Length: 377
Image (cartoon, rainbow, N blue to C red):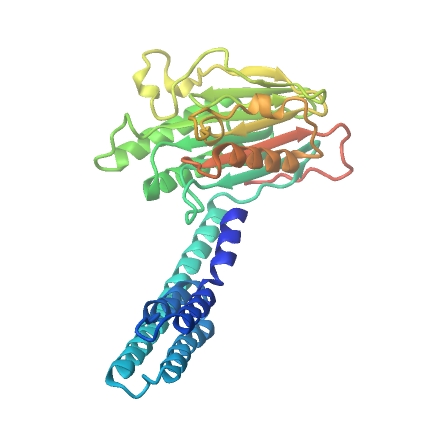
């Protein structure tokens, strides 16, 4: 819930009390024939979804007490009409308490579901180490749906004999099918990243995995079961990075002087899972183009999904991360991602329509005196 929404909720919590006071004031200043029964009845019903059980009960008692006091003041408390009015308010107050309890049970179930979703997210997309050698790493994940905490976006970081390798991807589709594909791809990446000597061959392993997954799932359209992805490799002791792009939004390269640019691929390639559509070399040969970019100390590689570049404002304009990040300096990758997420939220008014996964890797200007421990994420 955003800060603005929280402010609204805090303000409307005073509405039941305002209704009771307003009803009593109207009853007091208007002729006896006029009754504010409607306001007394509405107050506990409004309190039910907003306040605690105790506050809802007190609101119901207050409504009954206010009505009884005004009925007594005008001499109607003993009349059949007055007693019927009071009984109606009391019955509505009881119903409000029941509604409050039902909403409380539902809230507990929602919290439980969110907790399970958070646990699943940590299991499928665990936090990578904050540092591997000279590289500092940070990730962020935001689902488009507020109550969902995992979807079709994925990331992974792994220290391998060939250097630190990273993966970011976006599985087509939503729901459990997308989550299942995410787990399959991450499992393949974690195994193959340690053994395949090139990014091309690593991409070929991921391609075969998706092809096999498509054959296993009955009724899955091979033209729909694809994943856009970028593979990145930071060779040990080097001042460059290698990137392999399979139909994914190009990463951003930020330098220490504040310049920002997209790391565009030299040749376009189809997303993972669509390799069979291309007539050419054996997909197992690893023929995907790998581009090399300079990565001097102080540079940042920002891998992201299309939840960033396709974020729209109310006028339909796309967010431009190059313009938003150019000329800015950040203390680390975590601060960069926090600033980017805030900028996207401001641009969209927190109305994101797609998941957003972010992975930032910064090459430190000096190597920390901490040994690099091979990590699997």
